[in-house]
Image (cartoon, rainbow, N blue to C red; front, side):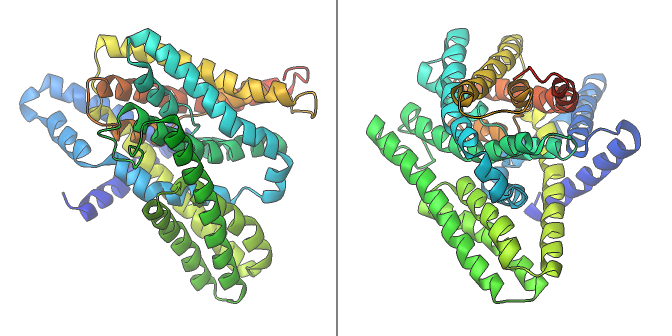
Length: 419
């Protein structure tokens, strides 16, 4: 199939599954599309078992595996999704929560990576460095999934900012940690630009270059775009400028070997706050907000559809299913530590909303980025197991945690003594 045919098929299926969810399931849009696509996938598998001569499952599997999910997300959709998410997080709100966001997006990701890596290595016998790669790809919360749930949840503003800000930044940090560990675990086969050296000094230099360079590039490009928009009063052209910033900036970051996700977040934060206040008319602001909200919703729908169909790319067996079940518990425990430690360190110096630890732990959803990173791993004996466990953690996170976090937030908000 051509690229246009694949894109057309994804849009048609996302629309059809979204309609099924709206008319019958009434789940949050993205989660509903994922559930419907999973049911459709399982239905195809059952049909193939009943009438194997049809070969439907093999045909669908060929189509699914023919789509490079990793490239489609990491080098196509991710920049737009992160930019769209950052547009709606205000710098003033983020500034008030900068310390917990910073600690959870850095220390939290590091703690979670170590806990998941060590636990997964002990559980499966996997080499520790390879297990740490799994820890890095499963530790960040996915801003696409998290922000989608936040839109339907009535949380205190400070808690919402912590969750949204952390999910945007720990995604970028987690991706950089993943690149560093890929370079250490697979120095000969890494295709991420992280394999020039395998020492800790090389890893530290790569981390600083990726994270710092991405942030600097995002702020510079965002400021240039803001200055252009300040001199222009044409909403269609200004929307086009923001689209060019998201697309072009992301590709420039990739070419310069700095963190493209962090670039997209920093640029989006600047345009969404400073740009909206001082560089846009009221009419332009409405069109920019509406355009990016629509882009966010459409790409969300397509992404969750793709996650549902990626079940055909995953190898399921008894050993992998058992490891996957333990991985879910391990990822939740690691998330609890990643949230609780920064909160406990800061608690003597500031107050926190009721239930911040349980809500942020259960609301730390995993998503398509983890699956894409798992698919991008070099081929080897451990990749199928990592991919299966990643997929099970992501599906559990989106469906079970995503559908219950609002209820949890409402319950703990009535218990002011609960941190």
